[in-house]
Image (cartoon, rainbow, N blue to C red; front, side, top):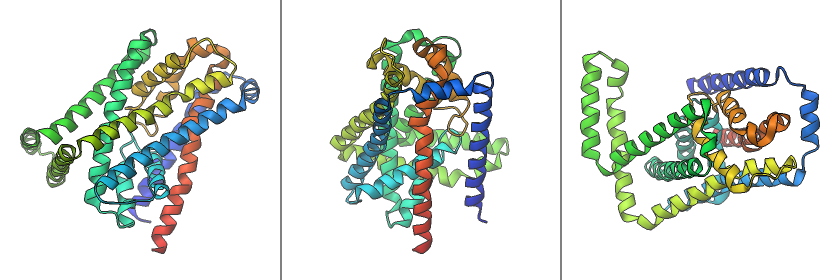
Length: 336
């Protein structure tokens, strides 16, 4: 059993364990039969719309990635790219703070003769676009629905926004000011050497190599400005697909007081507050934040059924679907 398989299996076990603990904590005082009764009375058309919209989320990402590869001279079929997107989603879901998705995606791409240099660059540009889109919707959501930012939600939201800004600033620094970034790296390496932090010092070469990839990103943006802005536009559409799912769940339960803009804004706040938590799939924290944000919208009667439907439609079902893509890719890799 190799180390990669062991790590993946460990992450899956942690993911399932956290899920089971969360279900117990959230529903231990609830009558599950009543919850299932409410779910069975939902409007299936709106639930279907939620599922289709989330599937569109993956399709837009596949289209975006395919277009970026095309700009580099790599023509990859849409369905093959969709497979890679689901693989990324699965490994992001089972690793803390979604850190495992892109590296594994690059690995599977390399097994299908896609140059690592190009896949790394494409995913870098995609991450830049996505993070800008997240920050845009986060700020917009806070402007439209500031009343949501209370209690525990406020603190997780601030944490999420700070992390997002740090990521964007760091990436921008590495891309557009590689000399400054190199000086900062050298400074921290000296600090690490002084304190005998061997694990960090040993990663010096890989960090410098990473900076070189960011330099390639700078060259790409300078020579493909239009494609970069198109990528940002597609990222905005992609996130829009994700954020409107809660509205369809809301309507599926027969509710209509709040409009699609208000609920989508709340979902953007939820995404920012829960997305940077260093747990696989943000399990546990996501549910806690969800209950705090959406109680005024769904009320106590519909709150937990709504959470099951929402997270099930936008996350758990697609984690299961992504498993099949991972298995298919793994079997194909072994045959090759």
